[in-house]
Amino acid sequence: MSKVFIMCGKLCSGKSTYANKIRSTHKAVILSIDEIMLSVFGQDAGEKHDYYVERIKAYQYAKSVEIAESGINVVLDWGFWTRKEREYAKEYYTSRHIDYEFYYLDVDSVEWNRRIQKRNQDVLNHESDAYYVDEGLADKFESIFEVPTKDEIDVWVNS
Image 1 (cartoon, rainbow, N blue to C red):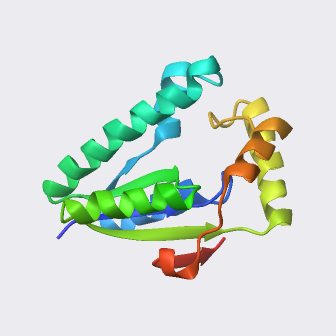
Image 2 (cartoon, rainbow, N blue to C red):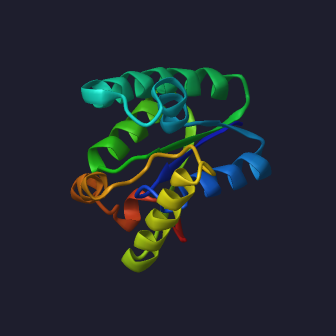
């Protein structure tokens, strides 16, 4: 039976690295919003960024079901920053009889800031095509992110 592995955590918490481990060990396909956004828009999608993200989420939810129903595991490398998003995902997959597991990548604030600095340096050095995380973006995500409770998460990873 195939499964959807759902990555939850702040940006720069290690979700993509962990998603790749799951991809390798469980022969899964990774669906990433950032991958599509960066491929299509680069670093700046402008004022429609959030609109495009929501459209990609809808597409990837549907595609994840198609892939899972074909017998292939899926990793959603998104973030699932709010309890509402996590509840929606649980209902979405439960109602479609698709197995899923939530993975939370927990990172302390010192390490989180170090990773943001490293990512930014890698972006500036053209060694990474990830998003550059300026202070405004970090503050935005910090204000949005809701740390999950233990009952929301299947696997808690200290990264």
